[in-house]
Image 1 (spheres, rainbow, N blue to C red):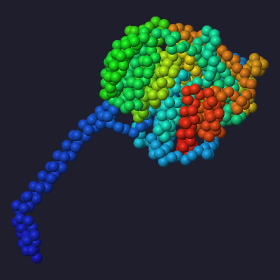
Image 2: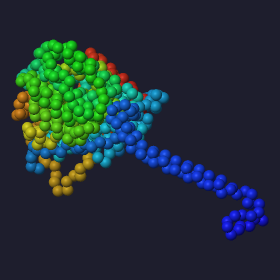
Image 3: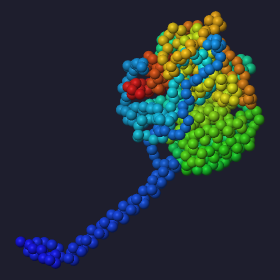
Image 4: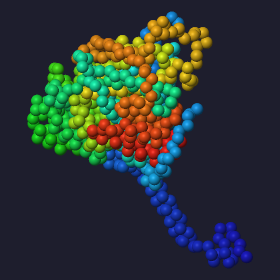
Length: 616
């Protein structure tokens, strides 16, 4: 049996097993060394982590790191509220749950679709602030404004509907990009007015001295058989390319790292080459680029020096972060320095909208553009790419810059905007164009404007020439659709409680005696004027059935119905994709450029998402 002596040594058998003091010292030294090594490694890792993170961020900003597409919130102003109207109506005295969607017959989603760019059906939610967000953490930075669709309004309470025109077409091309990549677009990306305005509807141009003509057509509503649709169409006067005024263009190009992909800067360069070939020899072109800093890579140069211009385009490459504010300042300074009186003076901004250095706040960028618009230089915004695309910023810049906004998802789209529709893209024939529709309560019980949610104006803004509105280019068409509920029809409950103390105003004798359904009032300014010119067009609904309406009317209704389905609007009624396809196919015989055929393909593409679309 072992005993422990007073000096700490052990007698007996256990003494045979305990190491000698020297061995115990070596073991203690080994453990101490291991501990020191572990502490050193941990300290080194802790020191390296910030550097690794900074390197990763720098890589992301320079475009060298590859990310999946994402959609997240960003700082901006909230989406425009529904219209709040007041004022005097021509037709009244001044005194006083989701409907079912049928997707039967749609084929199931293919395996490729199930593994598509958006791994789950993207569900647009209303973020605490303002953006529509895709609820899928696998994606990152694309952002879209949250669009709150217009509700029905009773004519006896709100007889006037006032809005700014919108000639932008970016939403349609962007929606096409999603669907051709086997993905549903987020609801915020679907702006129905831009989808409708992507197409030409054969409106006759003006025959008088006005810059545009107005056309009104009524017929049945395909998704709500008891309702009517009113189509208001505007056609700008046409200007042949050879008759176009002298042009002073400044290309403002984003050459930051995020633009490295071929479908970004590569498309930008090809788009510029297309446009340059259409310019006259006395037109002028300058190129301003911006990344971490901005610079003038081509001073204003006459278009007859095509080799010099092409060489400047060829030298463009991408890298660095994105200081858009500095580029905007330099581009407008260049345009003003070469201003052509009576000519076309325009900055063409080409970017993915990801401003991350310098002036990065959306509100600050919008304020800057709004200030520069006072110089008389107009703006075109062309969006490129995917992954970090900032649609919400791009749209607002074009809106406040007296401009138009397109999205280029292919070289065919670049040709459409910059070759086929060059005069419309470059030449503004009227600015601050506003529409006010005055409804007759004896003919219309309630109305709903389809789209234009972020273009709504107050009734008093119509006559206020200080209030900004949209521009229309040469040959451009603008279409607006109203869904109408006839008298006696059931009106969906709105968000506003009826007044406890006030009854709707009585119908005026003029309204009771008139067969007019509505009057379309317009105001516009010529490009170099500051005082608006008004005119109006009264219209009568003759009761035409939908299948008797013109092909152009039916096709516009099909595009609107498609937008309602993509957004899963609460007002989509009996709409379904199969019916949308059938209507559009029957209205696509006159299709010289193949745009309507392309729409048919998008509807077929969307049919594979039938179940996911219904679940949004």
